[in-house]
Amino acid sequence: MQEAAEGAAPHLLDHIVKTTQNLRRQIKDAFSADLEAILKKITWPKADAILPNNLQDKWDACVGKLLDLQMPELEAMESASTSKTGSKPPAVLFPLEVLVQPLEMRFRYHFEGDRPTNRLDKPEYFLSHITTQLNSYNNFVLDNLQPVLFNHFRGTDLALNPVYIDATSALITALLPMLRTKIFSTLPQVAGQPQLLSHFIHEIMNFDTTIREEWRYDGGNRTEGWKGLAWEVLVQQDWFSRWLQVEKDCRQYQDLEMYILLTPRSCFGSIPEYYGCSGQWRT
Image 1: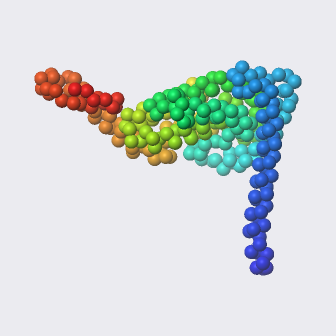
Image 2: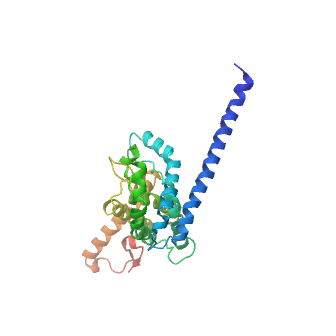
Image 3: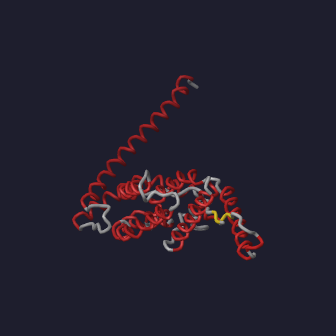
């Protein structure tokens, strides 16, 4: 009934939302700093890092406070995801964000810029790096993070979702964002080179299979399972048509090779031929 009040209300609500978000961010930064201080004491991310008994209570408290801060967000996401289509990645737990930060810096060091490990023709380098990280740090999160997750999520709807209640799945979820960034930034660079694009997609598929079968990761999708990074690339990022055409062309070249190999050379003389997806010519 009051135009002035009605006009001011949206600005007031916007101010409240921004103030709340800023306060939450400050609290998260403070809690994260406490956890980082513990990690520094145990020389994380050394693969043989051990949490001593005298830091156990402080560790549990730091991890617990971050989980408590994130709990409303996680519960809202879980209740909203009724269909479980798996189209949206699950949230990375706040404590895992802190644990993964130095691992992400190491990943970027090796697989950005002009490092010899950063090669367009060797996507298996950065993909296998992620599985190596899993093998190196899975025992640490199982020993030190799993009990805290169980205590905090027990009796809630989140306890039914492995990406939150299972420390290994939570670690995988935390490592995938850096991999997505690398994959999506590399795709435009290999798009114009059929042999590189074909190899790139096949290596992503192999990685997906490893994560599903060896690590039992379902991405929070209990009905369909984890669709994988290849699905995100081909379907969500709409690379399927381009990749399918590359595979068809490669198949045609391979069929031509087989025909030539089974046909007497006298029928052809000396002609150049494209040797499949390897991208090489021979006479």
